[in-house]
Length: 408
Length: 225
Image (tube, rainbow over all chains, first blue to last red; front, side, top):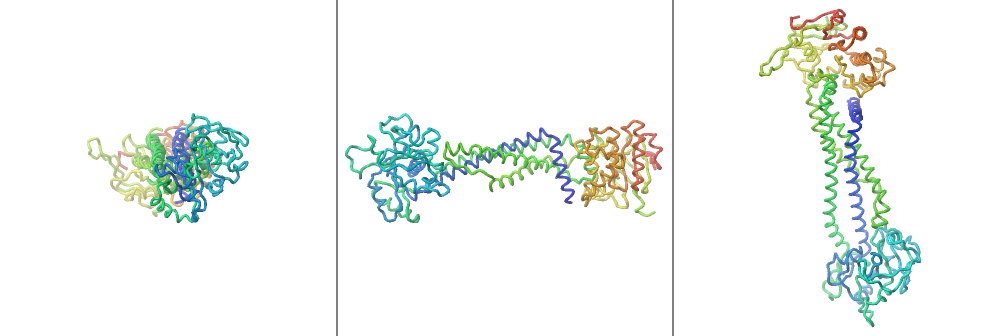
């Protein structure tokens, strides 16, 4: 039984090899579909993780009372939206003195340098925030953190690679969060460059918050420190369990700030982005299914020309199940060989693009075969079997006696 | 005579096919046929007398309408398709007019294929296939594919495939029809000698008068037995 099965498998492999061009092209279509699924899924999962990890540093974010919580999170942690307004410095003062708070990091934003957001903050931010591996942002950085009140800056890895900025580079910033704003005359010197962290800070320039306020127009003359405007405050609690309490207090307290939970907002964002991702994944799967259909059509058409071969196999004692299995295995081989090649191609493409994704977009992708790939192979087995069913049935019903007499 | 000594027993065999009008037309009628192991039988008859149909029914490729066929004492008629396939794989060697070698397989693989579908085949077929190819003088052509072989060599591979598994019965359909006189004689010599060594009976359909005289018995279809 086993030896016959092995022999049928060998026959199927020989049959696939007999049609090198059509087999190659069919497997290639499968490979491209699978590579697309792999690439989309890997980048999607990595981007999701990157978002989630970026949101991990703070338990709560204090933002302006106006604006949506999602906008506050996006502008503060991901630097992708404008802050919806300001909250007073006094709100920061109050929260940092709260005994339940482990760390409070102020953010003041409103300027850019060549399209990269400039964030006024404090050096402690680089200690409080971590990357996906739990390493503080400051770990492994080149140079040093900026000094409080000095016109110094720390730039992210993407900023450094895109602008060519390095330690010692001096620069000025422009007003507004889009390029082309009015340039300010103050200049900062880069004293530190972060390693690639896979977070939004790779794309930002951080300066001391005091120097942000030194820019004309960011504060009104003789303004009390208490009234200085802040874009947001990132809050790390001594116990994350307290975050709901803080949220509740925020809702019932003074309306100078609102507390938002970044993890909740990221989940909401993922639900929105997930629909788009799902759409792309569905398209990639459709490509793979189309490839399976091409296997079906290709094999089905070959059966016409293989009636004599099938009849000979039957005359030599092959049972209907052997013929059925032979053609089914051919479909499976094309699907799995194409699929395996597609996995390599997909992961290879992701691996090749990984440095660019990290350097240019701050997305750290996981390179390597994972559990998802096994699911993919499982799905390919099912697809291959489905693609082979109709041709196998046609082979099964080939009349033996008639075709033994046919001219070769 | 014991049943084991008989390679083939046929009794009251009938086979018909529907005509375009749907009426069943009988094309084969064999009342009695016994073929001992080691004997050779030529089947002759006009076109349409049912010669090839007889081969197909004996081999179990087509079911009989009536009557019985026994191969080495085992009933072929009355069995389901799968059981007929098994019996054919185990006890029948088949030699086709156009050889019917699979062009993408080597000579060794083609011969092995003839035994692949036997129950519990194991690794024996490959060894037997080598021996058979050696017997037909093609031990130096094991890895050649049919298009790389001459017509005579292809016929020898086909003979090796039919006999490698030591079947009780070899069915041959016009075994010399595609060969010139010299090659036809060589092939027939080889087939009959190899079959004798294996103790197999040979039943061959043929139109070739030169071949006819080489067979011990003759069955003329369409004229009674």
